[in-house]
Image 1: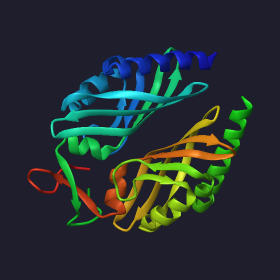
Image 2 (image 1 turned 135 degrees about the vertical axis):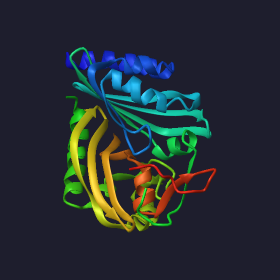
Image 3 (image 1 turned 60 degrees about the horizontal axis):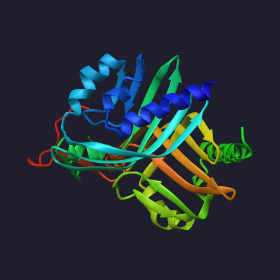
Image 4 (image 1 turned 90 degrees about the horizontal axis):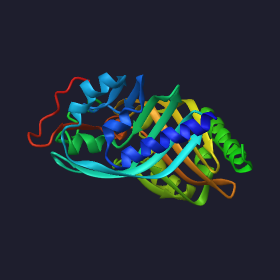
Length: 143
Length: 149
């Protein structure tokens, strides 16, 4: 039963993701749901609830000039949890954006998602959206 | 759980056991000879390796930049037929500083009693900074990023 509910929510999440309806995908989170984007980029962090996502995260992703086109390749479901493997490509204000290995960990609670963790290549965000580049550090070990 | 799921779970538990005991070589030896192991990102260590021999020949030397191998805590195990996902966190130390991965992920696909595919999800920037001595700067100005961390 739990698995059926998870499967239905994951299906909706994937449909929204692949149709670039990212706001709708986030809206599958419960009001107090948690969204995590890994890393230390300006967009990275833990967002608590929908309002937090739309207030803090959405503006940080406004730098996409071409929203990522995401294609899901694998869906794993185990009880109230799921993992989605995907690839994506788009463009940011500073160049092309390639994510050959996206991953989404989802956890279901009640009628919605209690948690989404988005795995991705954080350096791609830094370069394509925030205009950064990697160089040998003057003081190695400092971000 | 299906028979396939049980086999997958047994392999995943063995992988975790090796990892927790610090037997990292044994973890990689669970890959089939023609398996694909991918470390995400574009770091020097990133890419796809074919089978354990390729991992030991090309990846292992780069991982010697760890002065303290990451200690991992596994929080979630998902098994669905011949596929699995592990969520974990880890901390260690590289030649250039602390190495922190609060959101590790491992995707597995099992075939013929071993791993046919393994993808390691992590924050590649941590590798760049802690293991390879890089830093992020503004691409235009060429100046170090002043972002507070």
